[in-house]
Length: 564
Ligand code: GLC
Ligand code: CA
Picture 1 (tube, protein in one colour):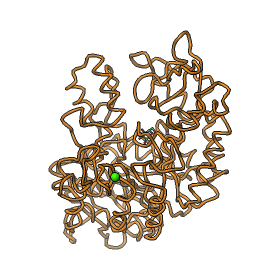
Picture 2 (cartoon, helix red, strand yellow):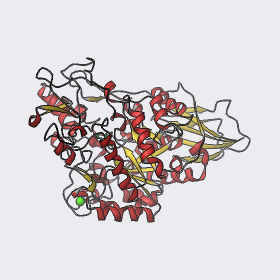
Picture 3 (tube, helix red, strand yellow):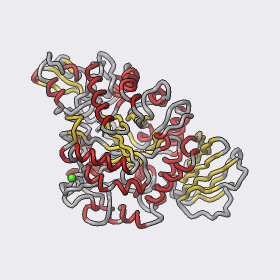
Picture 4 (tube, helix red, strand yellow):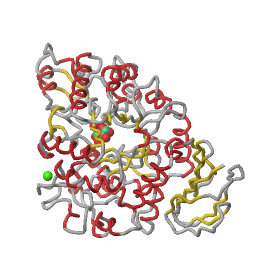
């Protein structure tokens, strides 16, 4: 396997709006991030991925960009951004920017032009179609509720938006669009950016003709993913982007790719024939949720450990031959991984460490989402007024209009809401968790009083220092980065265990995913010639204890290092 710095790195995601407010307006900003660079350096991460900081009217918190080459007013200025990059590079940290080029904001000048006239030079920057029998051009539903088409009076046509109606999709069939995107990427790379996280990048090629989606659910509009995800020209566009831009720099690239299989993943990330370093797949994120058949809202459902093993293991094995994985349990679009896959009550600390071990010990590049390192949890706000996410608010409104009891709708969306991850970063126990001296744009999770970085930094046994150790171990043992993954105990619903093997070195990773104890027995085929070394654990372990068989305590995690 080829070595690469981005395989050896750990990435930390910052959602700037909720990270640190420096000027008391209640909104996190670039100067706030600068204040916290020493904190990030102490954690030991290598790369920071910033969710979008570009000019935006914030219909979808910056994922609707009105100017790619400038900074959002609330976040600061280009000069602040330059100070941020300088501060990061000085500390040996790299910066990944979010690249949102499936769509722009409706306030982008390209779209303002495009909507003016059918013969405007920017018309074909977007996807315009006449109506069909007084209806939308096709029956696609938007990811964020309602039709994926918006009627525009000026030219009596509809434009496509697979997200909100303020996020028109760019027309990647148009070479001028592609060239404009590549030029913009070069501009940032020359300013010192070290890579891109590419928002819904596998949606850029749509099936020609934009056919109607098959009827798979209730309601007027249907999910058309098969016609806009992993489309016919996707690999062509990505390879062109690689030739024109990516291959000219030593950078890290990760595609956000909903609706992909491991085959797509391997194709996109293959070292020779692919285009990106890695992708974010979503199969494990769908494990504990389903669409409610009446309201179409995403609701929680029970999940099984064997299913998680099957998904993660398939991604590990299928990408082994030349691809690479990203490893994550949450981000700004997901509820907190700790609340979903661990225990955010009694065993919060133990399970946060166990899940961190799970993420960091597989093969791939680990991603930490802000607050994971202190064990931040989901929040259940008492009122819809406390929620901010456009997706959630659209879904709520639609369900209530359908006649579903508002209290019930609120209870349905609380555990799945994206706002779970968007509450302000919890810095200390002072008002608003030290995030802002003003009124935060979204409420702080009330548990900040005991879950915050000040507490974590003062406690040598904290989740923070456990992450720090995981990251340090990665730098010391190349088997953590490059070792081959193999699952053991595939049918166990409580213990998740696997090995990583590189030459004569082997790791045995043993994780208890439940609040009950369990007995672990080392399978016979795992051998060692010297005394196994315990690399990390979230409980005290008696050094004299045999690795052959032992009791695992609630959410216990251990990693042993073996040599043969
Ligand atoms: C991605 C982003 C999400 C955004 C959507 C539309 O999924 O992560 O936050 O709403 O794309 O840009
Ligand atoms: Ca601010």
